[in-house]
Structures are given as structure tokens and as C-alpha cells.
Length: 465
Image 1 (cartoon, rainbow, N blue to C red):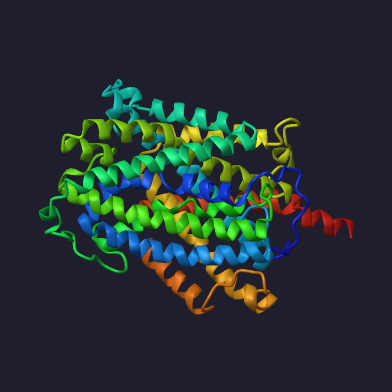
Image 2 (tube, rainbow, N blue to C red; image 1 turned 120 degrees about the vertical axis):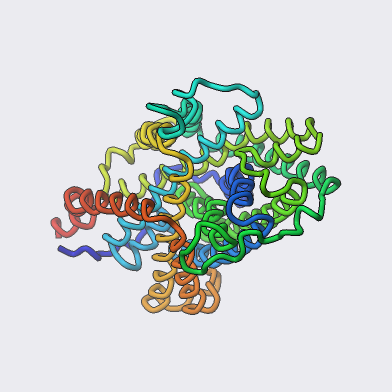
């Protein structure tokens, strides 16, 4: 068996190339500005890092920034369907690519579920309604059986959105991203006048924490948990089949979206912890709660409404990225090729979109949010570690980038730093998360050995030769 055979060429796409550079930037922002800032930031500040969460964000941003540079070099040198899956395929071979692709599938599936749960929390907070316990939360949130019915409803909306014409979907996303930023600007500007510096007096109440593992609190634990805040930039390379000039537009889309996100996250967290004492922020709608606590009910209502309307853009972006990873793996034969069939009219992989909806309903409706966040962070960091190692091998096998290609600086130093930093972050996750990951990877290996290897396009090509 040749488990490390490589696929380097990019087949001609059957999709329509309609995405421009600004579309990619707004797509990235739509994917990155969401749960991390509207929901997770308050909870992590309250339970893990306090006002020093802003330092956690900077630490996470540095790690993600290095990964973004690596993504940019790959996307400019060898744009490939499937994103990180395609990059690993070209450098390390098929089995490592399958593992990276599986980890990416886990990330995007779990992100869709997390977004759906967060959207439901803001919806309930906005309208002040309570559902019966049996349909108000995932299993474990009440005695006996329970399911998050609102999260399931959101998943259905996301699946329906994926069936739309891409140009229409992107236009809607662009409008909603602008609306989303208007809410963040309202929060920052309004909150500046109500900052109480005494709320920052105990700036790091949980300390720095252990660099490797240790207690589930502190700045480093906050960084490992807030890694979710920057997830979404890696969805941009997955637009390769539908982007105009992907070698140029994708790298710059990654940089612009990431820098903008870091700036807004830092400002929002500083204002949030300055307006409300961190101890009171253990709520799923932190920004709206903070504004309400200082009597700005109009601003609180506006932020809640915008969050309810626009958080779905993150879910749609993640579901889109998920569908393109599955599409790439299906085209290569590692998953059933029937999945990659496109609808005649809209040219979207409709079978994949239906599959995503069905699986995400189960995940979003029944699995607790905290478990989802740790597992998706772990999955993401692991394939980013693989990508960091891949760029070192890329340089060794293919040489330096060309004149018009993006170059990751300080190779191999920065990639090695990225690997070390990734190991530090994942050391803070609990044993249950690792067991869940191990079971998932065992399933992945079983699927590859029993189906993927035999049906791989490279295997069929070898048989013909």
C-alpha cells in the first residue's frame, strides 16, 4: 500500500468563478466575527481570564497570524481544492491529507453547531422567552432527555442558505457583515462613556496560568479557549474554485480579515470588561447584557437584534467551507464521488449540503456547547500544526516562492514556533476531549482503509497504468 502518494495538480473546476477580492475579505469577516465576540468573550473573561482576556486574544492572534502566513504561501503557490487537505496532499501524501481533511471536517461541523447554539442564546435573550426544559438545551442541561430545538432550527436555515446561488448568498453576506460591524461600533462607542477603571483593577484575577496544561483558568487557558475567536480565516482558501485570480485574492483576503478581526476583538473585550465587572459576564449574550446593565436598553436591543440576524453568517460561512472540503475529498475519490455532483442551475454540491444539515442537526441539538468548543479547537490546532510542518517540507521539495508569490518569513523558525505554540494551547484541554478526538480519528482511519484508499482517483489511475 502506498499511503503517501501525492496529488499536486488542481483540476479545472465546474463551478462559476464569481468571487472578487472584497467578497473574500467580507466572507472572512463574516466567518470570524461571530460567536467568539458576541458569546464566548464574556464567558471566558468571567471564568478563565478576567480583563486580561485581551492578552489571551493577542496570544491567540499571534499563533493564528503565523498560520495565516503559511496558508497565504500555500494558496499563492499551489491553490488547491479542499484547502489544508489539498496542501497536505501535495506535500505529505494521501493518508496525512485524509487526516487533515477529517480534522477540518470536524472543525467546520462543530463550528456550525456552536454558532447554532449561540444564535439560539441571543434569540432567547432578545425576546425573553423560556422554552420547556426538554426542548431548551442539549443533553445534560436538564434532568432526563433534552434537545436544543432552536439550534436545530438554525441549522435548517443554514442548510437552506447553502442551496442558494453563490452570488446571491455572497451579496447577502456582505450586507450582513456591514450590519454586524455597525453593532460592534455602537457597543464600543456607547460603552466608552461608561467605563469604570476600577473594573480593571484586578486585571488578571486568575493569573497567567501554566504554559503547559495545568488549571483550567488563567491567561493561557483563556487563549486556548478563545482560539475559536479567529477560526474562519482558513475558510477563505476553500473559495479557490469560485474565486477570480485565487493566487492573489485569497492571500490578501486572509490578511485583511485577520487584522481587522484582531483589532475589533481587542477593543470590544477592553470595553466589555471596563463596563461590567468580569465576575458578572458569565452569560451567553455578554455584549447585550453589558449595555443593558448600564441602562442603554436601546443599544442592547440593537446589538441583540443584529447578533440574531448576523450570527448566521458565521454558520453559513463555516457550512460553505465544510461543503468545499467534502467536495474536494469527493472529487479525489476518498469519499463517494456522487457527493460532488452539482445542481444544474445553481452549480452547488446539493447532496453535500443536505448531508451537512442532517449531521449538524444531531451535533447542535444534542451535544453541550462547552464540549463542542474544546473539541473543535483541538481539531483545528492539530491540522494547523500539520500545515506548519508542511511549509517546511514545501520549501525543501519545491524551493523558495516565486517573484509574485507570498513568502512566509523566517522558515523554519516561525513554523516551528507555530508547532510549539499549538502544543502549548492543546495541552490545556481535558482528557475527555482527547478521548473524543481519538475515537473520531480511529473512525477516520477505518473509513480510509476500507473505502478511501481503494476508491482514490490516484489508485484508479495506477490501475489503468
